[in-house]
Length: 59
Image (cartoon, rainbow, N blue to C red):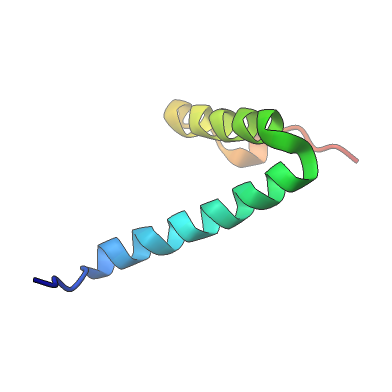
């Protein structure tokens, strides 16, 4: 039995695909530890309701 995915599920799948691609690029460039740390930091910002524009800008 095949169920058609809802539009919401299709949208979530698309975001997971983007996240997987970005994570792969990050691992290639800087390794697993950096990538996990960055993702945990992002989750923390989301949980605390902080804006990503609050991240320090490195020039």
